[in-house]
Length: 504
Ligand code: MV4
Image (cartoon, rainbow, N blue to C red):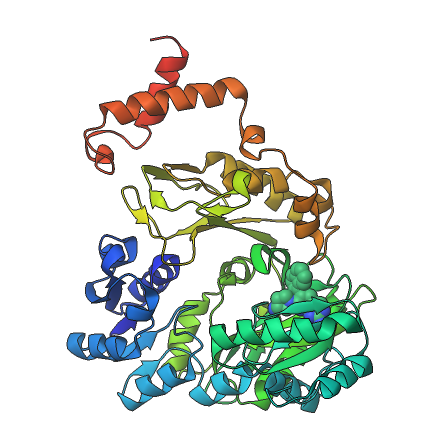
């Protein structure tokens, strides 16, 4: 096998790492702005696939297939995002004789329609949030829409049939707002997915977001894993994920996992996938949607089960049997927490902060895993998602995992661009987070009530002044940005800071 990774950034690096361990040669692809990216350096070979905008590079199915053919690759890993849940791409790989490391085009398509996925869940005896059965297409009249809204009741959610992850989603509190919400949801869905159909669900008021990772092989076996909790989201973007969930007892875990496995089995699901649920305050859970890809937050599952999900994806695609012990997959060992580090300024409303990374020292040490996609001297592009790293802390229990995350966040240094690290230092100290008193509404609410700086809380004043002064001196002494590490140790700026702080 020779594997082409049709992706970039940290997930491309993650897949390359798995391939190295399995002795599989790798081919990276890159756009103009990613010429010097870490994934290009880490792979055995790299192919340029086009200009920086994703539609001209990472979303070009033809270029990916050409790159695989030109390099003799016989397998393709799509990562997440870009072409990962594109059934046309999965089919194009098959047509070109390439092994797609993921589910079948049919399964992608089936779950890509969120109303179709609801039907699968209902048929499998898995509860869904009360809502519309059939999609409301362009032809639906205002009367029909209002009647459907009244039948479901308010508050309700308007969701895009082709959506997922909160895109094209609108909350409606009462009937007079419904038609306008349907119009905006339709137009958002039309431009994002090329499909304006929507459906309604009753809105659960304080649900937690629980999801079940699973694997399916080509011999009919589906194995669900211990849950992840992803309730800490900002504007429908997950920012912290953990496993296990404080809200899930072993008995509930068995029930949710078996529900997830029933949905996957109903479509003959193969490879890695995740079923999302909402968990209500009364302990009832509801199927939400299925993600037919490896997810960003897969490392927390790996940390508590000691399984390598990317290894399994590749082995499954090769036709191997899933020999994993189901009881082992469902039993967490310790606790893992992941923080998604974005190139954003938390003090400016999480405004994107792309640009040159002048220095980076990821955290390491006991129980810490850093999945980052950038290196010193790389310019974080404006063209793609701004996540630059995932920091994962593992420990024997949740309080110890939080303590470890705090330690790792204190260690993590990124110079040149703003990151969300100061925000996570603040969040890890919040009593409600520490006590597990949160649901999907938590973060947007606490952020709305806050206007203080996150970075100001991060480090003692003197230390910050010294670091700033030292950084300044270091930057002046460095010959050119990005090359500084060639002649100076990576922590030169800190040494300079210390010297500055001591007055000479
Ligand atoms: C919901 C919901 C409540 N009720 N659906 C957001 C992402 C997508 N995967 C589904 N999402 C939700 N769907 C119903 N019927 C709550 C969420 C939700 C959420 C809503 C508001 C603010 C933050 C949220 C975080 C996660 C999930």
